Image 1 (cartoon, helix red, strand yellow):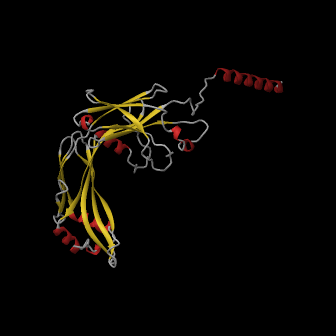
Image 2: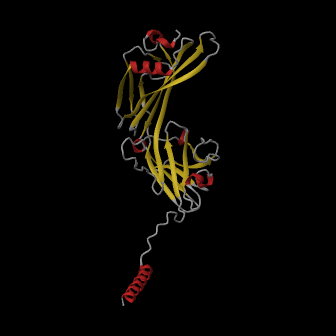
Length: 335
């Protein structure tokens, strides 16, 4: 009786297992679901440019190949075709972007044999207006998908110092280097870089001249909310130490300081937020948030304004000062 009872219990258990399996819910997750087009857009309007470019691509997923393999296939990265338009919020400006292939793409993880970009001329009567808001729309004829994004345009800043234009002279003798400007419309933050152009040549053969450029990041993410007046004072010592650490100090080399110049990069709040979100994490938790302002897709459509003043000559007093200063004397700067 004990043996029959055990066999009976096993039979009942097996029958129950079959019944449960027939009526249980399916909860398997197919991580490679049916293909779905996701449009990826990156565009950065610049009121100072006569031509605007927008990159339009697509996100991909392939059931039979790894992501690294697919990334090397150009057709997996771009839409077959797209209709891209840019218009102002008041519809006074309305332009169609055309696809171009003439700008090479750097080598790297992704395929670079093709680099389709969408291009629009914005000069003359078709110039952008910093007082307006602009709308970008991308339509995919193959799927009927459309994505949309908006951004305010960053206007020109009024740069007051360290120099106003190329006819000025650059002086390094004051104790502080002053960066002063009136921020442009819709600007939120600024980066300022200074370029120092100099000649370098051997003491024993001055005909072997090499012209070089040393770039110094003077300000990074300097706040400029609204049309504020920006004023920053950077110790002269910081500039001298930058020159000392960048230019080769060698008794066998002469240097001649030729020009100074600045590049001013102003961004709107969308661009500033995107950069902030994507900064490398320095905490224990490495997961980062995602930032996108593309409705129906992913990416970024924002605005920046790039201005530069170059070929500003050093005044004679500054050259003499750098020749004799303890920080830069070893650079063998010629008068």
